Image (tube, rainbow, N blue to C red):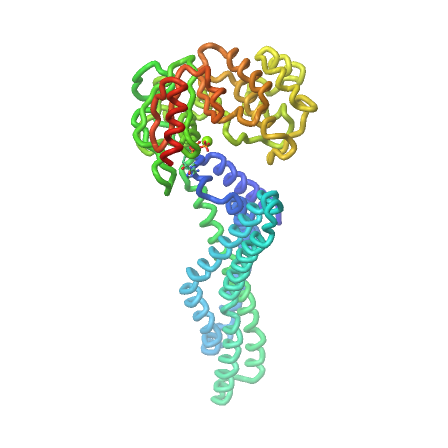
Amino acid sequence: MGVVGRTVLFNLRNRVFLKLQDLPVAFFNENKTGDLISRINNDTDKLNLFFSQGLVQFAGNLFLMIGAGIFLVSLNPPLGMAALLPALGVLVATRLMSPWVKKKNVMNLQSLGGMSAEIQESLNNFKVIVAFNRLDYFRRKFDGANQKNFSSAVGAGLASNLFMPIYGLAQLIVIGYGIYLIAAGNLTIGLLIGFVLYINSFYMPLRQIAALWSSLQLALAALDRISEVLALESNMPVSAAGRTPSRSVLKFENVKFSYPGGKEVLRDTSFTLEGGKTYALVGPTGGGKTTTASLMARLYDPTSGMVFLDGRDIRTYKPDDRTKKIGFILQEPFLFTGTVRDNIVYGNERYRNHSSEQLIEVLRENSLGDLLGRFDQGLDTKVTSSGDSISLGQKQLIAFMRAALRNPDLLILDEATDNIDAVTEQLLQGILDKLPPSTTKVIIAHRLNTIANADEIFFVNSGEIIPAGSMEQAVDMLLLGKRES
Ligand SMILES: Nc1ncnc2c1ncn2[C@@H]1O[C@H](COP(=O)(O)OP(=O)(O)OP(=O)(O)O)[C@@H](O)[C@H]1O
Ligand SMILES: [Mg+2]
């Protein structure tokens, strides 16, 4: 593959990848990662293969074929025409069959994506597979995907080779018609032999073109799958700044929300969070706490209703401005492969170029220094994206430091302390208390002692978010909720 081909492939992969990074969270709920990887790796390659090699060969062969065609016709017009007749058949058949062959190729690429998704899923879950000794289950699933890919590949291959017999047909026609012409005294044997030999010069390039045509169908199929991704709506749209209803930090106004294809998780909820206060969200498992927090951080947009951040429709903030204001510690913290340091300064321009000493100093100033002691090698402790090298509690500590260092106006902790020992939890509580007084905190917790200091408690269940009043009432509601469900 030449430089041009590599450059095209490089740029195409970049575009698809950047696009994927721009897509809203909801997209990834609905699409399998393995298939998306296959689109970036395989589909772009198929497309590029045609354009970097196929296209040049296509043009060259077309040129050869036309030249040979003109030569054959001028040598002996009737015999020449007869020799080219089957080519016309190929042309018509090709046109008729293109959509079908392309469909076969799309199916083949889809099954390749499906296979890659299967592999990814089982590799991600290998611990569960080993623990439950379910090797057979995943093997069967993979076998299925592999079988599907095999059949669709055979189908696509068959579709591409349908025209082979036509070339023999052309020779038969020429020999038959040539013998007739000789008998009629209109042709010499020498010329017929020359004709039969030369006919190859026409049909060889045609054969090549037909082969290239099938790789064009494959390229078009790949293009379809790539453009599907490229055509998607980038990130959630940012709308123009609108009205200012109040000075609250965050406000839900008649918010309804359901996941695509799922039941309604929030049913017409309205509440207001004021600056500097601490709020707790409690409720039974699956009640909608994480969903509510995700809407606060605009990981999703409400199905209807409005969310206001600092008195402005949250949809009017650019992603950068929004994420500066909101620190979100997810229930399942996400880490990158690298060191603790890399993960703490991720997305934080201010500290990116700090030396380790400077960063430790900053952490100390923010009372975060003691947390580093929970890692064997402090800032340089290695972390993998799967998080296997460190404990769940340590993961949460990293996420906590990452969020606290950004000094957000609104800090959301989704069960961020559930896997942390009591002493470290005290430490975190101390850090939370030392955050600037204007910081609004939203704490989601199953362990009720963590939320004892909250200014207000919301009870989240069956699509409703209602003020629970006191801690005792919250506990009552929880018990009642449990009895009902
Ligand atoms: N990505 C998703 N796609 C579809 N449905 C979802 C998704 N995430 C959550 N749900 C559904 O939404 C409802 C609320 O889930 P949510 O995660 O908000 O609950 P939660 O209160 O945070 O529970 P927990 O205490 O276990 O963390 C559940 O019924 C769940 O099945
Ligand atoms: Mg949750």
